[in-house]
Length: 228
Image (tube, rainbow, N blue to C red; front, top):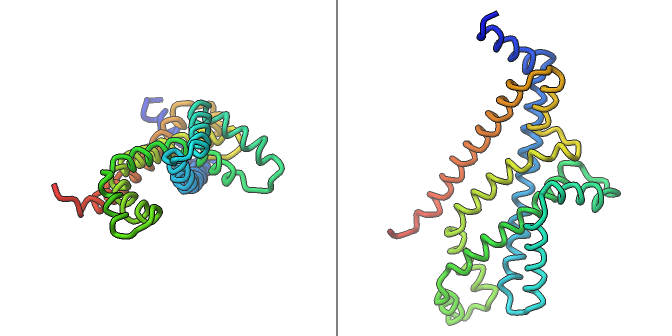
């Protein structure tokens, strides 16, 4: 048997036989669902924690600091297992939703620092200008500071989202059949390692490449108003 014939045989066994490719298709759906929900949760939590860290009250800054330190100082897989097997052990929720909450909480700590840095990068004169126009602190932050900060932090947020997609590869620890878990299942069923691993790598690459192109397009739209 030639090398090409051997590769064709392995491809058939891994992806065509018994419709095993459907495991990967289903895994893509799980990965996308978990990642999208985690992104929204991460942004929401990140915004709240960033505002806590920028607060003038020490007690509020303390809460934000503790959250950030604990989340960034512990492995994401440990957080996932604690949230799934302890926090939500008796809660009737779909596995992928619990996983998304875990990843959202994890991402929120990193997003908060990105947002905090973005807000601090906006010139303080912008805040003073907003207040001089009669806007209160909340209006100044939401209407003047944050819109400018978003353009500054958008590339860093994009990078965080890409990292988040790859981090979801550990959801197999709680029994979810994502892309990585599907590849592992095929590898165990066929005793072929190369083809399933390459297949999962290609799928992740294509997903991230498409996301990168989309985010670059959005960034260009956001930058249209810039004068350089």
